[in-house]
Length: 338
Image (tube, rainbow, N blue to C red; front, side):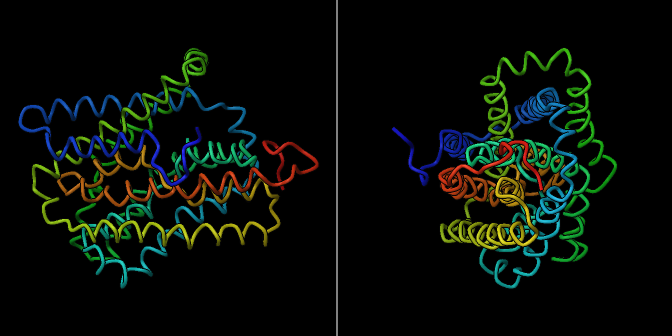
């Protein structure tokens, strides 16, 4: 039986379960450093496996499609932040200042990899370009997101908010050693590890999801211990859903129109829409732990979790809609370019 598009998938249900566990049984005391060490190791392994999985040939093919990537990167790192700042007079009163910073954090994040590629594939779009664009967005995001988030916090709230974003050598050291170096190591060792990763896709997917669950549990446990959720009204959570819907409602149609005006093929349009409108949870939560060290990380990632679920619910029927179009003549969807 096919799962309805509006129903959360098993991973989202697991996320909700982990949040509930963190609310009822948060990790405390001596368990905190143990969980932190385990989380860092799991995140490093996650990025090592991504480096081992990403084909150099596909990366090279995708890199040649620079116009598509330029539009995706502009949407990811320019359009979203501009919208986040322009909508501040309406968004911040709805959810409060801390959660609004969480919304800005969404706007500063790179694209997501797995679901962007999966939806592009289902929709019969340019999979090679989507793979390269989403992956490159994540790599660039390791450097761009901290700088962009610091700038957004400065513009939104002044020096106090900018100081809440930990832009020190320790911040970049954490990103380099936890995220970037494991990814590079995976690329370098791909000749030895790539085959194993390709044969164990289910295990890799479980590792990805398990790492996210672990990080979310730690973030929400810390927020629970600090008592941050006791004053979170249900209407605020509903407002976060509305904000996420508004961002998607603005970005996705605009990318569709721009793709057609700029003369991209339908396959390229699909990759642009899915890669340019999505934000990563897998990289976002670990980044939040590093960037907002000592802050209310659980609250700051709550908007991202809401946005993540909504983008899946919106993209699933859209991918099926694209897939139902008549087959195009000419080159296969995975290789066609403008």
